[in-house]
Length: 198
Ligand SMILES: [Zn+2]
Image 1 (cartoon, helix red, strand yellow):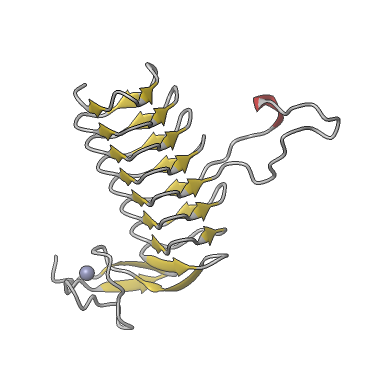
Image 2 (cartoon, rainbow, N blue to C red):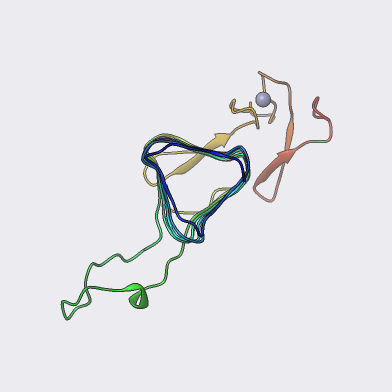
């Protein structure tokens, strides 16, 4: 497979990297990880064993994606963001022995298609960030977020909805920038039938 890898990056022979991907300085990709076509892994990104990253994803500098994480197509992971996988982290057992992989179960975060996780965010284990949701910089995401949600703060709270283009939607769920409109059903926002994009 043809992709770009900087000389300083370390990619396991047992990882899959899609065509046209770019793997920049100091990146480490562990065994069993999968990176989709045309995805960009910025400087010093860490992709743990078995992590799945889709196509056309941008992972910015120093982001860490731990075992169990799933990042779908066209998502954005900001610089220094962390997708965590251990809700009760301990270095050792109560007897003082270092814990091994046998002593805990990795449970990763899932970032759905087109969603954005801002700079310095932490997404806790097992949390699902919905499609095209946007999480403000520095937030800690402790609960699942619906599609197109705009969430901010620690813990992250939903404060509105965003368009696929990234602009905030007005109260009628229309985007003032690109004209797309949305409907809300069961707490999820999805493209509406009258969207100018249809
Ligand atoms: Zn828009």
